[in-house]
Image (cartoon, rainbow, N blue to C red; front, side):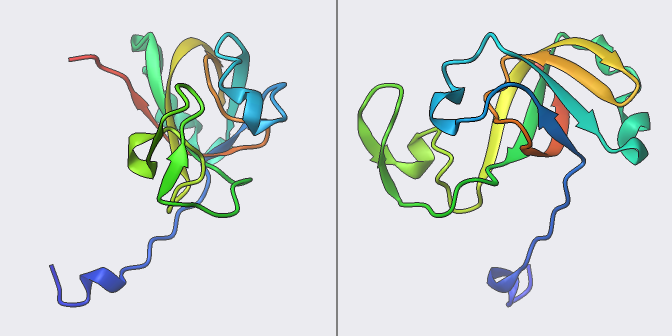
Length: 133
């Protein structure tokens, strides 16, 4: 690592966007049975080759509606006050979310998934196969 490694800047660009009926982030977690589409930009479609080998995938996305963060927060799912890194809050220093979803089918550059707790229009940063072991 270089001496200036603390000054690194990271730039990411969406590979696609979420399309679903979830419009309010406050209620997104309650919609784990909601089906969503992940519409990849056409230049990334080839990267989906053989993704149907997996029943579940990890979707990494950007909390584009979150404007700030705090290090201590009240968790929605159990009401306990905890550090941001001990929560699933969208109010994070880098605004990155990840969810394991069920992969239902793939149509060209569109993934049909179930269980994605991201709102409509959320930028998708990456997709990886989920392996429990």
